[in-house]
Every structure is written in structure tokens, then in C-alpha cells.
Length: 432
Ligand SMILES: [Mn+2]
Image 1 (tube, rainbow, N blue to C red):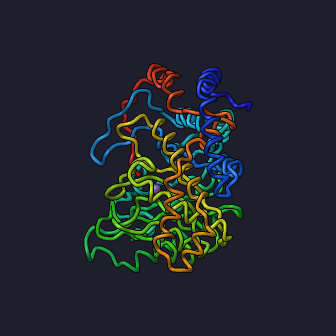
Image 2 (image 1 turned 60 degrees about the horizontal axis):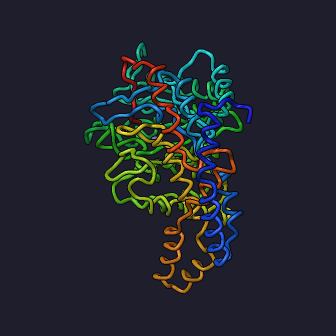
Image 3 (image 1 turned 90 degrees about the vertical axis):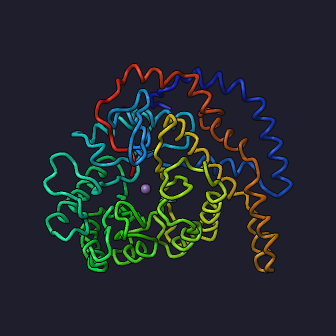
């Protein structure tokens, strides 16, 4: 690996050496156990190694609640410092080779220079994210009453132009997708003509769609509330699906796990979108109540497993145009964001590997026989398997750390950054 690494390679090596013998024993025992079930551990480990998820550039800064933000020490102050923190996450987990940037938060004059800086750290860029849900300093027109669906054509024009600008920056960075989330909607019944607002949104999106390069896709992100608490313009996967279908093949539906009403069966949403060739990918996070932006797998790891169960099933049955993009979208308020993101990447990989272990032949036969208990037990057997040795072995073989958190804490990285990066006086946005 020619890229420069932010954590001392010696430290990774010595920490791994101390854990290697135990890992090899555990891996062999798990391999024996899986072999009895007809599973070759090496093929699973190879797939675990191929798994990757993009880090959101905003995720390495401390987020906040809707009311306040309590910054942590050594926070990155610009996109270059964010990339450096992202490189730590990838160096130790080997599961996060790409960064999903956000504009204008990550705006730079020299996008080509930004791409070079990422390459030097062994990183690339994933989907670019536009922002028309808040006003920026010096912006001529306000998004207070909406952006792509605004009643004033001049505001819509400004929002369309921003999205097209994002595509241009993304091209320079090597991205191949644009993610669009709008906060547009209404806070009062009667405030908006619901169908006219969606018409205006579709008209704006069609202009953005027309600016997409041939090999690009646009991801439509839905959310049922906030900041438009009565009705958002793109509230649910149904609206998202209808819009993506109206726009064309390059438009797909992005599933942010937290962007659903309480009780929504998210794995069902995933299944439907995959079935009809419209699943763009994910913003992974976890939640207890709503769009909590908590760490992936922190609250409901079983739901995460069920989502990956649908993804593995879709891949194995050859669902149409199935190429989901995996991104994390979390807000880290009380943890070191690097630790949260490393843990989250590993939890996503864990859910994926558990889903790979589902005995699909057995599951199908129980489904056909209407044996609900045994079908459920088949899923549970995969969910309760301890696949930790597979994940650790995949990291070790890829040059990462057997225990990323331990190496990170020993490295003193955060302490060093706290000295190098004095706290910024202006608080950055954290919640999206
Ligand atoms: Mn999101």
C-alpha cells in the first residue's frame, strides 16, 4: 500500500501479533462449526473482505441534538482534516475506502487537489450530497419555504443550479452519484397544494436528471417529517418510487434507516425496492424513536440483520439492476466520531456476514411447508452466530487491526489532533 497511513504501522503490527494466536484458534473452531453446516468459512471471509461502506464527511465531526452541540477535542476543521480522520477509520477497519462529501460544507476551490489529497490517503469519493435544506451565508434567495418545490421559480432555479454544481464537483472527485434530500414541505394543512408541490419538485428534478453524466445515478432520499412536520414533499418510499420511475433509469430510491414512521417494516421497503430495480442504497444508522442518527446496530441489530438478509437474498436471486451503495449517516454527540464510525462499519459488516450464513435452501423449504417456527429459527440461527472471528480475520488479512478500537486508543491520535487542531469558534452543522 503506497498511501500514507495516519496510524503507525508498527503499532498495528505489534497489537495484532499479541492477538493473532487466539484469533487463529477461534477462526479454526468457527470454520469447523460452519463446515458441519456445509459452509466454507474461506468463501464467507472473502465476501466479508470485499464489503465496504462509505463514511459521510460530516460524520467525523461531533454532531448535536437539534438544540445544541458539544464539540469534542481535535475536531476536523475542514474537508482535508476530515479525510485524515476517515483514513484512520479505513486503515484500521479496511471497510471504509470511500468518503461521501457534502456541499457546500466541504466546498474547496481546488476539487482536483482534494481528489489528490484523498488518493494520497488511500481514499476515494462516493456519492456527493447537495444541501438546499438550509441557507448559506451570502445566498441570494432563502429556502425557508422550500427549495426544489418552492412556489417561486427563481428559488427553484437556484436549488437546481446548486445540484448541477454538485454534479460538476463530483465529476472532478470521481463520484458517480448525487444524493438529494430536501426538507421541503408544509407545517400546516392548507399551506401547500400537495400535488402541485410534488409537480414542482419533479420538474426541478428532471432538470437535475438531465445534467447527469451517462454513468451517474441520482439517489432520492425520502423522509416523512422534519423540518416540514405536517407533510414533506417526498415523505415515503412510495412517493420516492413514483418519482424515480417518472424521472428515468438513473434515478433510484435511497433508504435512510431513520427516515420512516415508527413501526415501519424497513426490511419490507428494502425488499420491494430491490424487487423493482429501484434500490439506490442506504444511509445506515440506528434509532429508537425516529431519525435519531444513532450508531448502526446500537439499538436494533436484528432489524439490521433483516435488512441485510433481504440484500443477500436479492443478490443471490439476481434482482434487477441490483447494485446498492452503502453509506453511513449518523450524528455522533457523546462519542469520539472515529470510534463510532469504526464500530458502525464493523456492525454493518457483521450483519452482512450473518445474512450470508442463512441456510437459504432450508429457509425456502420451511417457507413452502408453511413451517413458521422453523423458518424463523433458520434466520435466528444465522443471527445468533458469533461471526467476530471472520470479521477480525478479514481485517487482519487486509492489513487492518484485529481490534481497531484498542489500536486507535493506544495510538494517541485524538490527543495529537487536539493539539494540532485548536477548537473552531464557529459551530458546524451536524444533523442532516
Ligand atoms: Mn440521510
